[in-house]
Image (cartoon, rainbow, N blue to C red; front, side, top):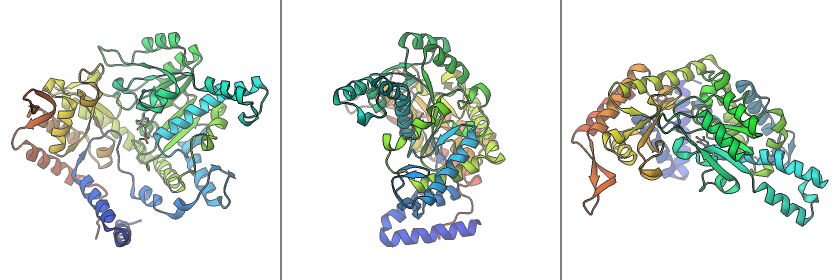
Length: 478
Ligand SMILES: *Cc1c(COP(=O)(O)O)cnc(C)c1O
């Protein structure tokens, strides 16, 4: 599709939307302008291709298709069958996985599917066999109650939130922390690095049914072969949540021991982060777990989002090209450039650097909390998010860190020089920001004072970079 054709298509679509609800058309237009004008460093965000975006906007959304390919609870699903099987085929081939399930609507859904399929495989099926029943509907009320208790009393070991894990890895306020008896592992308090010996010791002591690896805010690669050894030693099922870094796996930046797919029993992911697809999730599994993962619906899902599965197929196809491999390598190279840009300006990074797509800047050396840094940066047009650092003295709300990722700006074409300049702009904001005071006059963890003129100077600096690397180049709305 040419730039002119895409521009015409979107302009007309927005006119049609605006004729029904002008505020939605206006917000959609404004979002493009805002995204174009901001330095987006949120590590979990990206910009999907116009093809991926267009694929979501169709009547495939209208179809109910609960069930699996060729085995639906609704009639007339032949086209959804095609969509789902093409998406799953691309996912299997892209990641070299025996089995792929592309129905989950989000990363959290993918994790729920994975957790319940592991429980089904390891607890429910053996329980049924012992009771001589084929399925749960055959059980007496008393037998079902005891099996249900057993399903709800299993152990899960995941990485703690403040070490970089995700809330779905056993954090108490999340359902994963309520459905499992959970414990968390952290990182070495000195180095900030994952300590495999400490993890092994914790696993030996706790003996989890499920060991979860993967992260949202850990700036290093993980040796999944080692984690699998630990899981095997204690009889745990290894689940890797690659939501953040699946683009680096797809793009063959993480290979061998750093590729989770050959080592984990079950792998989950989002599609919209470094993988640059539509918002969504998916699950990959070894054969042993495939049948259970396949029952994601009715286990925890309802009807699949067929229009999004179509866009996943397109995104997976895009990720199978050599240009995506170049993109993935640039994500990692650019993160190194960003880290070096900070280190050369005397800023402090958790673990002292990065070898993936993100950098965790410890802002306490600027005398700020993460909340203050995040707000001051936003005032200067730099979009980031605050994040805990290991053993954070400011807790999970105010935090002491800022998480910065390279996938989005790498999509815009930023390279080494641009990311060095980004580090310079960020340091300029933070070194010109002072903590504010509370209404009562005490020190505040939230308010801040940014020196006069800095916000505008940094905005001008960002604008120069952003204009050189336009978002959706060629897309002009009439
Ligand atoms: C983002 C993320 C998720 C959740 O994805 P959603 O699509 O927002 O539900 C799950 N796990 C990890 C590790 C993540 O980073």
